[in-house]
Image (cartoon, rainbow, N blue to C red):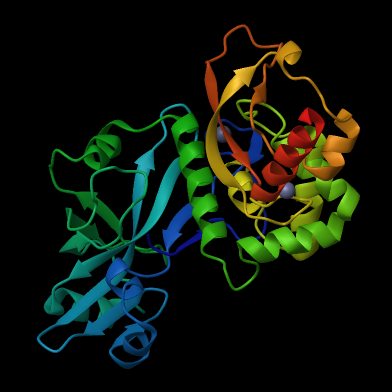
Length: 329
Ligand SMILES: [Zn+2]
Ligand SMILES: [Zn+2]
């Protein structure tokens, strides 16, 4: 997966009076790749020694050939909104085209067309977007060249021809924001996020946060408002990208009591009556809350499977089993 930036097309304000509908609304961000995929896959040494990268140009000098790329814009129409979705995409050009584009770059010559191939993997498509043939049309006004894909069976081409919905566009923006958080390890990795979050909210709230996260079987499909709020305050404080729900279970994957990494299991769903508590629920919550030997039936659900995927803490299980055994004697 490439490295993206997500930027607002206008720098000052993201709210503007729309010339299409006349209302003031938010501008959609553009989804941009910072470099061609072929650059991303180089090791750090090669990035320094054989490659050159700027905001609009990239050259990679391999032993047998030099690859040249420029940054362009791919615009996908959004049918039910005033705006379009813009991708900032790298395209490989021939040496001749690259040199010509580069020499005319400052003067911003418009109306030139070059042949090129897409050099990024757009994650919104199952089928690879690498190597899709395009025309690159230069534009004036300091705007990056626009790409016009050649006819092809690829879904990207039909999206380009027919447009997409605003819902789809928002999904794509969210997905890219998502991958942004994944590729920012220099700030806080998964473990650091968990550890700092624990310090930030304090032990008691942290325990409550984790246990609530895992208390429903199957897991809930969203967070409670107070959980979202804690995460939000945390990411604001640490100035990191918002922590998205789809990453929460992966980040908070440790028993809050024993700090053991949680493991996966599939267990039977049990009715409340079948679970005879040996010690009080409160005590159990303190000592081994994540044993999850079986899963209590969620009475609010009409439909439930026989068994369910759970996560558990080995230490919690060990303690719970001991406790059950002791009471049997
Ligand atoms: Zn509008
Ligand atoms: Zn535990």
